[in-house]
Image (cartoon, rainbow, N blue to C red):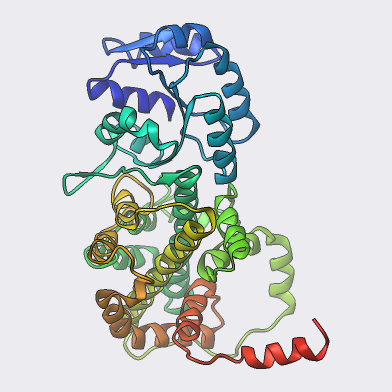
Length: 439
């Protein structure tokens, strides 16, 4: 990731100093990938700092946590007032809050920058979400917006807000990514087990979906995965992969923060729990042998019509996921005193990142038309989209329930929608119960 960002910056006309604690890696990089480019090597932290012009702009790409603090501590003796430290790792936003304040006391400007797009994005244009000490922005804006991905000619990078706002928005991005991936998996499961479709046919469905409202990076790679066969025997490779998903914890951070702020970000929460459920594989095997499901043979009278319903269910559920994500961002801005730019956030996610999609252009338009939009669902475009998708959405979820196919994210999205549009919920009884036993 670090090497690719360096190469990206050099390609855009910037001179970059590269440093790694393993000096041989620096020398090897200079002799190979960086050869002939405006890239200078440094063999120590002091050497790195001495080779940079003032104000120094130093971007760290190290493992989140204590390693970031350790590196900052090692840098400080060689820095001058006004220098800038940028943390481009996956740091938790409270750490960035703390570092912004701590370094400001030492007259060092700190930026916590969310970076999305993986190694390829880093090389050819990532989505960049910087926040922290805004005094640093004029000194890094040109660099960041030059190397960032572009969408309709606009850089997928803008100043997010104070303190840990950049890493907070990246955290929500990752949570939405969890939700998008789980929704796609549920659609795959319904087509595979409910409709009995082959992987190739499912791939064709994703190919079609990728030309419409669901056009996105994740739909595109899912199409490719469905179409890929193991060269060894010609069978679908995806079916040989263990159904136990890993996670790095960023989706969990989003769910925990939603609970802390009292926001019903249900879809991201369910996507995290779906991964947790997948990980108890041996227990699920035992449960499959002991527990019964519905005695119903999955069938539909018109397969294409049902696939169209499934497309609408996926689209509507994505709208709910993003609406919940922006609800969380809105509440965080209130709680932490941040001034966040919702249109810019949507724009930053339009290109270079894992959740990039044409769908985000509509979100950008909604927030540009009304930067104070209370909820994405109140925008006329999305209100109409949900209205039109609702019949197919309900049919698809109902069929999955009837067939006993788990749809935690489809179901919670629909349940949230019905709860959100309900003027009077049964919480009056809940409050009476609480009063009765004396809380």
